[in-house]
Image (cartoon, rainbow, N blue to C red):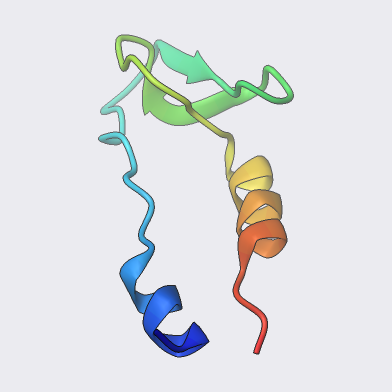
Length: 60
């Protein structure tokens, strides 16, 4: 499996976006996210999502 194939296979699953407050807290910085508070799982604010995407991006 080439690096390119691996990068297309790995996808993150995102929780549904909230229609309004209350919003879940980011698990890294505790800032409000765009996800509902009732969502069970890892939620990240837009800034931490971007940083995580940069950290885990495939390099080629």
